[in-house]
Image (cartoon, rainbow over all chains, first blue to last red; front, side):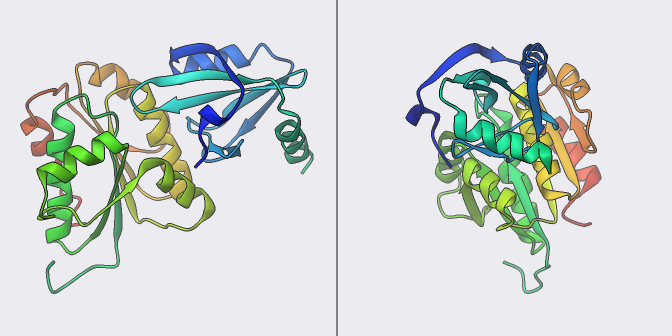
Length: 92
Length: 155
């Protein structure tokens, strides 16, 4: 399991519900749905499927859930590699 | 362990340990499972696991404990298969974990929902899942009674 602390990340929203994260990400034109357990930056994404993640330029936005702190909406500025993975997934 | 063991592997997933009834109920369910010969894996955060480890120092009730993130990875990678799961839920994050476990295991999942907001949290369950819910915070008996009625260790 990876650690968020090893990434250059920004917290856009904190201690929100999973539903709020999904609604926030709906505003982005480029978005993808992934299943629970999807690996991004060596982090397993947790949530009620399908889990929405979004692309904003070169940045990637995704929900990050911890048992005691709820869900955070995370933005990683340089998400090129992960964005390509998502785009390739959609083409399948 | 009893002489007769089953081929079942049950997964007990702990949430944040800030509500007192969780640790007691996890030990109770794990103990009943162990007595029935069911392999039981308890997954949780380091603090949730420490509460269990201290309360059951000689492993009378527990058999196996693993890190929650590790278990999610093992289920996603197909390195762990379980026959049924029991997720302890008292907040929105717990619902997310329950949904994830249900999706990853494709096996019967039970959400054991407690805490002051048990009713509202129950309404967030929109995926296939048995629900055992009581607004319990300090007294585990109402949920223990419901567990005894369902008796998942007998199934």
